[in-house]
Length: 218
Image (cartoon, rainbow, N blue to C red):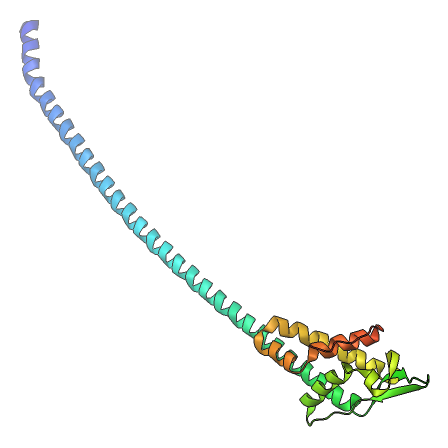
């Protein structure tokens, strides 16, 4: 066979083969593309699932944060309530201590020293008019604010030396009670107003510092 005939023969043989390879390649590529599309679809589904899981986790974290916040608020309120309760107990204890101090150490005791018109040194005793520790505290406050000249006592006035330490302690207790009452509220402030603690404390300070006149009103 001539060369041209061989070329024609080979072309006839390999052309179908080439076409088959082309078809096979196209089919393989289409399969690969289909697999890639499936992988992308699966990847997208996985991303969506992950996103949903993350949303659920975020929601759970938010709920936990809210729960922790609520628990913190509850604990803070409980601590505030405990602090207030302790202050209320301290207020009551200090008030009882002050009333006990007045009743035990001031009733019937010589409290204030002065002099008469003739120059003689005299003292004024505290004698309560009512019954009970609360009444004793009120009477003592009124006693400290009384006009001593009507009782024959002239200035300069001073606390009797034997009672100074107890009166200083009473003034310090009064200051603590007033501070707590201001921190706590109307109930305690009403109590110290009724018992005239402010006036008593102010008058004790005035006499300790040698100031006159004393406070005649709360």
